[in-house]
Amino acid sequence: MVDLEYLSLNRFQRFFYRINKFFVNIPKSFCRFFKSIPAFFKKVFNKIGESCGVVVDAMRYGDWKTRLSYLFFGFGNIANGQILRGLLLFVYEVAFILYMAFFGAEYISKFGTIGSVKTETLPSGFTKVGDNSFNILLFSCATFVIILCTLFVWFQSIKQAYTTQQMVQINAKLAKGRDDIKNLGNKYYHATLLSVPTILLTIFTVIPLIFMVFVAFTNYNNQHLPPKELFTWVGFDNFTAVLAGKGIGTDAVKFSYTFWVVLLWTLIWAVLATFSNFFIGMFLAILINKKGIKLKKFWRTALVVTIAVPQFVSLLLMSQMLMYNSIDGGGIYNSILQLIGLEPVYWLGDPWMAKVSVVLVNLWVGVPYTVLSSTGILLNIPDDLYEAARIDGANPYAMFAKITFPYMTFVLGPSLISTFVGNINNFNIIYLLTGGGPNLDTSMATTAGQTDLLITWLYKMTVNNQQYDIASVIGILVFIVCAVFSLIAYSRIGSVKNEEDFR
Image 1 (cartoon, helix red, strand yellow):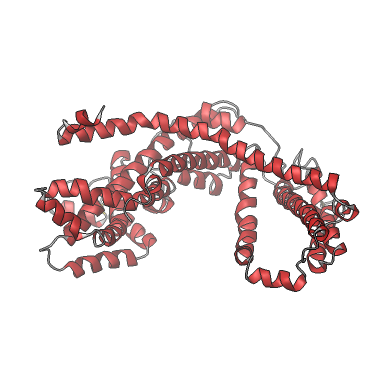
Image 2 (cartoon, rainbow, N blue to C red):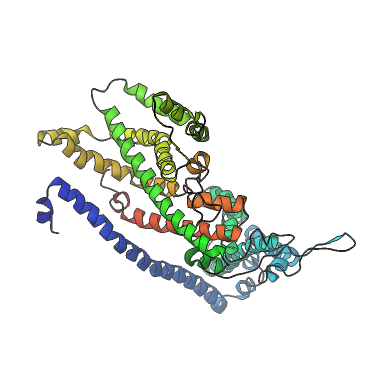
């Protein structure tokens, strides 16, 4: 549709045209996303190729000092007078060799089978300790990360030795130990500052994440719990069980059915929870900010007080208030209904009412945040824009549609995407309010309820049933859904595409 045709439409036709265009463009956005994947890997391989080129050049054109750096980390630096830098690299090499000799190599050698010797209790009563599949997999993941870090350090040792050789050939001044220490607080201050967080992130996030991915390809569950039992590799059986209902016996059909039902509700919940909070919060912020409204400070303070109460306290209290009891009605809401002559409502026991209830309670928890953030944006919209619109004859609806709403969506766009992804993984609101229940559908896996999200179902499978293999698959699929949506959405919103528009 050309611009003149679009301008000839009335406001409702334009609204539906934009909605239709949004949904039509979704497949195109997915296609663009998947087309960008080869380009990303091309850049990665180009970087790897450049690094390999440096290694080859250092071997071809390097002197004996540089070539010995292939075997002894930091040798080229030490031979050329950079003692501190060279010793640090050499100490790292020695530490790596000792780690592999006395610890890492043992676990790496058993990685292919994840252990083969079971722990047994002998007739004499003594326990013959065997392999522990959990420890083998975990420490193998840690060793893989350490090996990758060592390859990086090895490359840096060669690169620095070759660079030092070239600087010596042109009589350039080399950095000494004192200069290196000074650079840690000046030139390389960013690396110094981020080194500790990076190490902690690797230990407590990256390694557990790799471990979880590997668990998805094993049969680590309540029937194969180390140290008494070993678990083994099963390939893609867990994925085919969850996605297609095949691969792990009769439970596979239930797992697959449950996954798709829970995934559908998770997406519906994320949309309802995100956009109901956004639009209602924005409406309340505009209403409070409107000229002529009295007690503005009171309304804003009331919202802050609502946020000040810990969320888990509000949710547990609300869960008690929504209780149903056939004798006395249950919670306070049912008691009020009985006082006015109405029947008590099974708020959290009926599947549809439970879903409506969690969405409504989420408004109580989430709207205050949206109101406060929207208020800050409204106070920063230039009044000149509204004055110019009034002079041009614009009515309040037109000013909202052309000024307020675009401005707020532009600023809140990234936050809206983050909120959507956060609602996909919104554990508290579901688990503390309904516990994922009610559990009425016998076709679903026993751990899943009608209001369970993927994240709460995953929690139940791990804590209650020790089904770590299926839970890991669910975790990977949740990550894929969130990552793909976030990448596509962030690349499409105006805040990223037209960053300078509202400056």
